[in-house]
Length: 343
Ligand code: ADP
Ligand code: MG
Image (tube, rainbow, N blue to C red; front, side, top):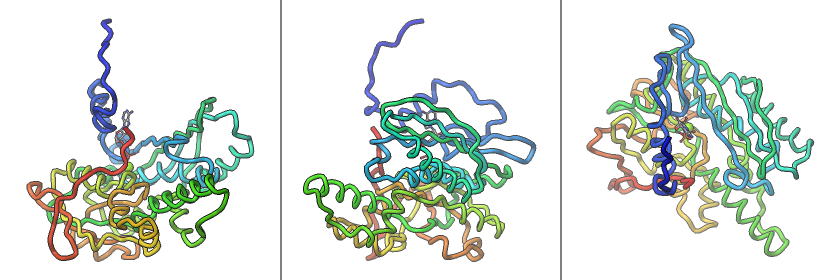
């Protein structure tokens, strides 16, 4: 076998370019695979009308979390939530999880028990069972979780199903997790420099909780089901609203009008943005780590859903129109830029 000796830095391709390149190395999927790489979770058939979805998400110390201010219990809760969120983004119900741990030497048994208490709490909340995993030593704490969900075949919401004229919707609010993380990092920096606290973080409790222990929007999935609504497309917001909307539009081959003034941003998120002299809209569009659901439905479906769970933030348009940000004064500009990038 001839070794390929060229060296392409990963930064040249970026995260998604890399995944595409690696995907090309793999062969064809089996006929039972309805969706492989490229959505929030993979989908495969288990019987004529039933499917399962499977997703893996990893949290790495120093990349996804900082142990100095992330309590183990919250970290465990978050690790399950981010996986349950990808299952919810397929309109499936999360059922099972396995966890692979890389454990550094300076972690105690008690800390790991706390981590598991957080995972157990999240599993209970989402109706999941943690049924296995793997344990190894490593330099940093690594938590890699695989989650499996179940649905009827026709219930699955792909990123690719948005139709021109559909309403663009988002659950909860956005920008809060990013605001929370910025506050925590600011407080850490200040404390390391001066040995003293600067902020009253209790004022920002909501933001801190959104960053350290987010909740997957299974409540929205349940509400769709209770009302017989099948969203035409869905994706969860892990990398920022702007970036996830771009994925959804690209895969559905549509454009979108995103109305800036309709994007749900909590008052406390606005206060945090003000503290940093930044735009709350920037937090909302590019912040990431929100684990809300971005989805599309037809106009008549909006009437039946619980309006406390989501907001209509725009409409799906023709692909030639691209993704437009509709500004407060009625003007518009193309939505640009990326959310969080790893490479
Ligand atoms: P999400 O943000 O919803 O978790 P990602 O952006 O992490 O999705 O991944 C996008 C798609 O690429 C998913 O279908 C995921 O399964 C797939 N993927 C990510 N990393 C790899 C990898 N190393 N090998 C194969 N598939 C991958
Ligand atoms: Mg996702």
